[in-house]
Amino acid sequence: MATDLVERLRAAGRAVAGSAPVRWARRHKRALAIAVMVAFFAFIIGYIALNPSIIDDVLSVGWGTLALLLGLYTVILVTHFGILESTIRLSGHRLPFGEGLLLTVYSTVSNFFGPLQSGPGIRAAYLKTRLGMRLRDYTYATLYYFFVFAVLNGALLFCTTLPWLSALGLVVGAVLIVIVVRRVGLSHRWPQLAAIGAVTVAQVFIMATIYFVEINAVGTGAYTFAQAIVYSASANLSLFVSITPGAIGFREGFLIFAEGLHGVPVDTIVAAGIVDRAFYALFLGLLFVISSIFHVGRMLRAKSGTELDRDAVDGE
Image 1 (tube, one colour):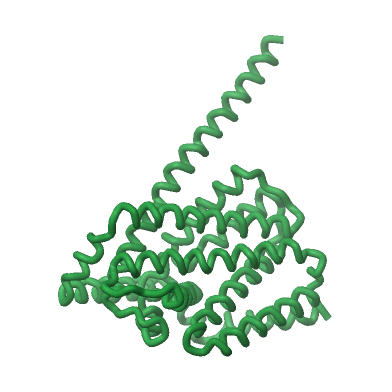
Image 2: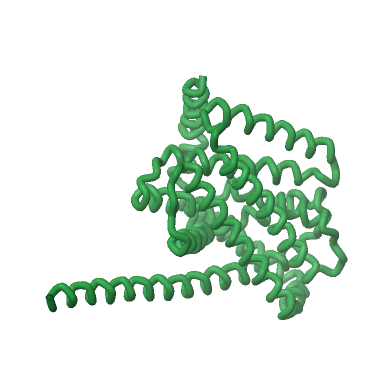
């Protein structure tokens, strides 16, 4: 039964991947990404030209807000590490703490700056080479994480307007998870699956907190945390259709399209987006530099230790 379910899922995946729209998008993904980014920046430049007060809103963000964002994005990085660690344990493997942290940093940087959310691919290739982790095992764990992430954000999108629909979505999602886990024979791995789910929930609400801080820092009104949750949900769902670095253009489009749900006006969306993208890019750049320094230092220490061992052998 489990094999039949897996085969049906694979067949459905192949059908979607082989459909005409997907094939066309795959053939033209570079041109599409460039077109979206050009259109996005043209929109931003034109919108700021018509609403120059947005720049004042962006520059009004204080150091206290930036320090708070630094702490929150650091916690987000910790959640990425937690999901990676739980994924590795789900397959019965172990990875040293420092190595897992470096992999988290590098793949997170790639996931933002690279198109098509390339972070999972980097992690899969590294874990297969380093630990011999099967691609199938990593794919299942990653699909599980994406499913939980999608269900949570899809439900939270309507938590203030149609709460019954949010509750129904969560219940249906939980039931589907239980059914699929049992049918693919992973019932003995519930602790690791629960860990991935719990960290994903924390990640979703921390992202909502980040957006709550940003929209209140640049907005003229006082936005509630409930609004920030819906705002965050619409922004997070854009990641599933993104072909541009950091979902540029798509996230803003989703946020503007969902304005009737979260109630945050376009001016605030644009200003908060500028703050978020600029800060997150600097944050990832700083992380990359720091982690690279640690990585080089570790390589030098390992090389020095090897040379000392060789000298000791020669001395004998």
